[in-house]
Image (cartoon, rainbow, N blue to C red; front, side, top):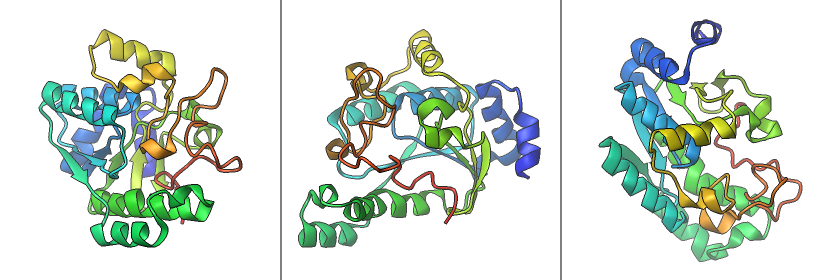
Length: 232
């Protein structure tokens, strides 16, 4: 099926990829948004294509105020339902009670534990039962993502992932946002190309890697939280 989908959408514009997904999979498709600039483009395209794809976001409890701002503006503009998935309350209570609210700074294992509780486990619930997972991944975002394909099998989550914006450049994203009046996170204008949880995200300097601002204290990290690891 991967090969067939790849063949079918090869050369299509992003909105036509969304329409293809709608035609072939309908309500069996789900889109994950973190309200970053790429995800805002996809939300616009999903609305334009009148797609039946479900939309969800992971509410980790540690988001920037600016993220909530663009979340509200997105709801106002597109009138789409965006399902919020929260981490398991008991798991968060146990983590914070045992290790404190900032244990993720202490070690890579602690950071991954926090990511699992706040993001990975809720993600499993969010995509369960769907066949297609639409994401805003672009190839130029990092070396790790350059090795991905526009259509791929995510073995860890047992789902097909499609990245309609995979070959888009940041300049194309920004131009599309401006041309279509799409609401976006104001942190993007302050040097934040990748926006996650507030304690784990900083701005980047000119010339730094796209994801240098994520978990910046981990010099040897691959700068991924585990959401887009395709193998177990």
